[in-house]
Image 1 (cartoon, helix red, strand yellow):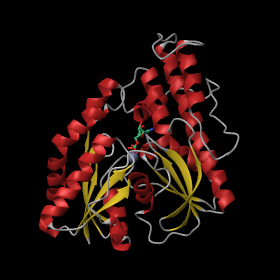
Image 2: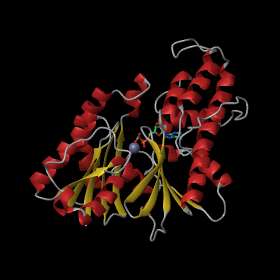
Image 3: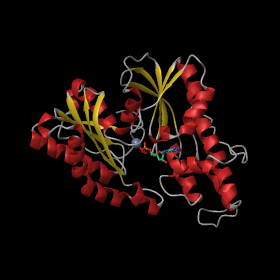
Length: 342
Ligand code: KG4
Ligand code: ZN
């Protein structure tokens, strides 16, 4: 089955052609990051307007790169949740219109579930229970995966998502958006032990995350005690490398340690990690150092870490072949509240 996947939940306009949920023929990603970097974050209205301009050319490019025509497509999959309302509506209504014109079905998929699917896509078999960890710009959570597409929430961030914390710390350091890759670059020559930052421990659930306190510690290190984000920086340029390295080390180690202990508790030896922060080599390095021999960490293949259409098309194949009720023109965009895969 040939599936066209459409992704417009935030600031990437992406389309992809995938066969049978696995074989990627094209994965076209048109990032708007350069545009949004002037605002040091995503400007939702402009993200929607950019999708208006970029979406159809991106889909056309994806068809060309896959060397197929629209007549070859069997199913359209689109991410309809969670995300920014305007961008979601762009992708969803485009998918509905194309499905209507081409007289083929379309399905809606959850963007976060698709991030996890990206880490599973290359697996021939998966042993359950497994642990799923989503580390993206908008969400951070862990699920027990009891069987394929069957999840139980174990823990989630009670405030900022990990990627959001990277983006906000980057803004404090005057680095462009998206902040994660910039912090990683700056941190390469920094001392990760210089600043004794601490990630949050959440009392009622040790598998929850909290990054807002860590963010405040970083703010005070850069701008002084009781400063705010508009206060001037009081540290030297050289010290910024150490701030970046110390923040990165603490934030990512918190994710890795909580994931590894959750895996022990649920008796999982396979951990699937998805979302934009899996782009981080540092995250992989820390996992490699701390992971015991009996446990295996799986990441998305290249270009499937950040938002993309291939994970949507891949998961869409499974939704389309098992969940016929989801193929309805009545499906709507759902901007938030979708940590669990409803
Ligand atoms: O999953 P994603 O593409 O978008 C959402 O669904 O939110 O994730 C984007 C996030 C951004 O916050 C970005 O700063 C972060 O992923 N990110 C990184 C790295 N590359 C991207 N965070 C840390 N280190 C990186 N190398
Ligand atoms: Zn994402």
